[in-house]
Image (cartoon, rainbow, N blue to C red):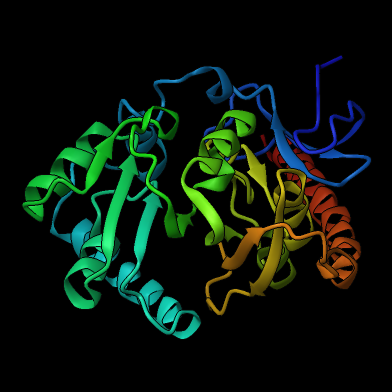
Length: 296
């Protein structure tokens, strides 16, 4: 039997969802029987500290190693979209802002130039970090893992865009996060929202929904549980408005817990709905697998 321990509740009982996923080898998707968190079992990335630093993630999952004009435009456009949301949620962006997993830094450089924000970024990929500092002629980006980041300045806003599902060690990550927050820091988390994706999904690709580098697949309920575990309240959940049937990236705002939070009760319906969805997903994967066997 495979060893399994839920990252949120430490339960060791699970339901296997599927062994199909992009770049899967021995991995399989497991759903915790207690809190319903979806995570990868047998993940080789969990023990490979060099996976994101080396560029293997970019070449294996993103399909490129070097940043070209197409990639620059794509990421600048995405940064502009994120700026629109930040402007709606914050009256003033002239603040201390840290982005964890900032890529080559298009977002923090827009914040610096347009809003006079005091920005900094952390990026594990050495190629991305060096490219960004050279491209923008700045030194905003620290190249390395967040736990090795030596700036302990208190931030007003911390941005975590499509990073939380890749974290290999939450205990270390959240311990380090505490050193950059004050009592009113807002943490903005954008994540592939499996609840939004699967309820709108009309098809499954040959490899299914899951991928090797997503160590966890969150819905609003389980992501709020994770942050609650480490002392943060969910202030707002902003569902994805993307039309694509693939990843739908929703956003959460979190603050340090003040022990007054009704969010968990309010969003229990998401847990119930997402469980129903996963029964459907498991069945579709099973049928797809059987179809492959029949035609091979």
